[in-house]
Amino acid sequence: MSIQSDAMRDLIQRFAISALSRERKNEAINEEILAGKYTGEFYIKTKDGLVLSVDVINRMKSMSHDVIRIAELLNMSGEVFRVDFENMILPSFIDYESNVLQQEPIELPNCSEVVVYLDIDEYDVMNDVPTPIQSEGVVEFVFEVIKDGVVSNIQINNTLNNINYFKIPFEDFEKITSIKLSSIVINKDDKVYTESESNRVMVLHNIFVTLNY
Image (tube, rainbow, N blue to C red; front, side, top):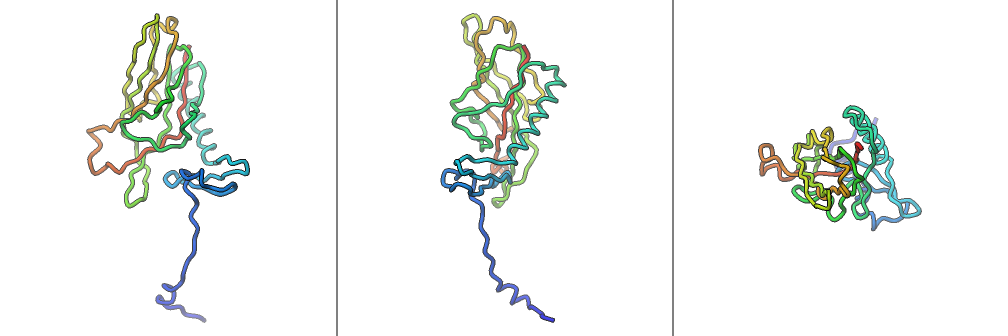
């Protein structure tokens, strides 16, 4: 029988390799594994240089089922689509109190109502360790609408907890020639957030839009 002392165990050396962060995907070589350090999602850079993740695909499928369920609950019978961006690859870190869409407004077909579904995770980071928490931010949407040749902005405010179930109406939509969602801003609720909670971060995974004609 072999007895190993605590001192001997302490001498054991360990070698490990950490997956490259997804944010550094441009530096990855083909067929290298990457990881989302906050979300726990794994990726692989294919032989063609594409970055794919079964975790991201499965989440998108799950969220799309949730979006359809909410659409049925709200009697939304129009088109449902996921928003793709040219310059922002999802999932992506987003900042509080800044326009999530940056310079990429979402153009919508003429519709009488719309529901904008935000798939966002919020984390409290302590000692570089992220812990998922209940989102408590306040969402501000700004729609740019052209009706009868007149441009107007419609501002909608709601909490992150409620916004995915909130129908946004457009009056006299048959007179509308253009609808753009030009801004999405997540503001901190002053009643909830304190200075000690300034180490919170958000990750945007998906945006879905459901229409009523």
